[in-house]
Image 1 (cartoon, rainbow, N blue to C red):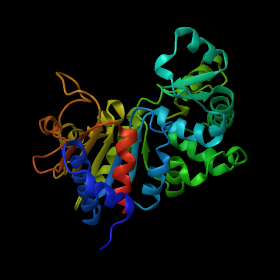
Image 2 (image 1 turned 180 degrees about the vertical axis):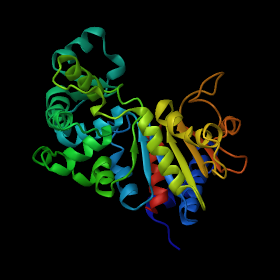
Image 3 (image 1 turned 90 degrees about the horizontal axis):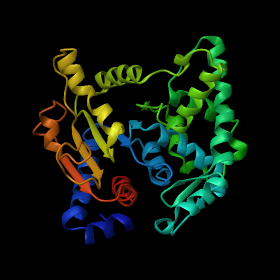
Image 4 (image 1 turned 45 degrees about the horizontal axis):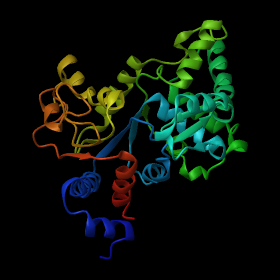
Length: 325
């Protein structure tokens, strides 16, 4: 059967080292899904500002992703890009910036992420105004929602549509919202909107801190989802970067098995990590997959892959292979 252009190019040229690991990981991803398995994808780093939605959104629409665990930054920055893309400023020579250059960007209210600056007013404050209405409404009604549920609410309300500056099909969060995809956001407090929420609690505008539900509640939600979906071929774990976005959800398996002492809890059925972290002593992001066996996260039989490269390059290629592009 003829291969699609991207897949054909990759299979012809990507034969060794990290390139071969990319092909093997993509093939195993497809095989896991074709056998009836599901896949959780984790997003660390600044993948939303890197516009991963260009490929991830289609993965969600085609049911190649069944849950996402991401940092608070990745949750909000996909929406920032959705409403303010034309106001972003790219800095190709970011490696050469002086401290004075950085101060000049600050004066222009441009928050830099490597080579890309997020505009304060058009992105951050626009979303703040929209989500604050939801926060205060829930607070006054005595209701509580997860961070991603608040984002789903503002997207479903249509109040942001007039500001869209990219094709909506390129927003992974919009695709997730349309599928009502489970999203887990551990450590949401460590995000721009998390800081903004704290400021409104400090001023007293929001009376109940727990109007936004906590990370512990996210773990409880994840435990319920895992139990409901882990039988058969099981759930795979596709990790982009390291940190809390990867460490938090992978621990649900040993929690269920060891802490709750539940029998017959399958371990993760597939594992792949894209990382440029150097393998070193005590580094979680740089740990090889086999280390996770001793923690009860993976088994000896779990298909395991690590692609040591830049996720902004690798992830779209893996997704293209999975999608048959």
